[in-house]
Image (cartoon, rainbow, N blue to C red; front, side, top):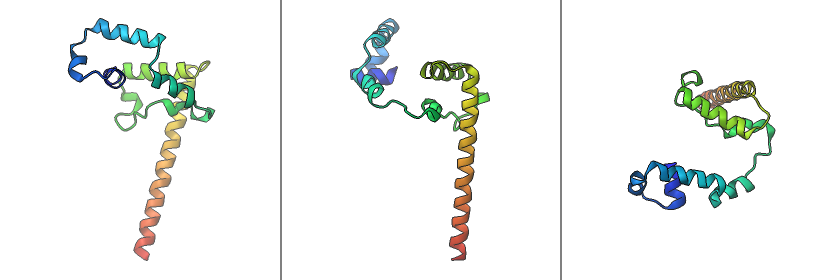
Length: 126
């Protein structure tokens, strides 16, 4: 929320720190009714067309902690975002997509490591 207030309203960090929580909450409620222009523009012009990319909007938390070690509130926020972005899907669908995405990432990393190893081997053999 701090980032949105700074970028979309032009508020300084000091001004944001001095804001009352109720003012921030009112701004958030207002944005739900009247989203900022850049949010509307992104929603209108950058729609996901590929059904295979359902998880592309979900942040990759793998660099910080494994999924099982993520705090429960982070897991719930990600799942809620997934369900909102993919009407008709269930928590079980989320889990299946999450596992499939992780499997795909692992395969890509393995293929990249193998390519790097072959390249190093070829460079050594000249």
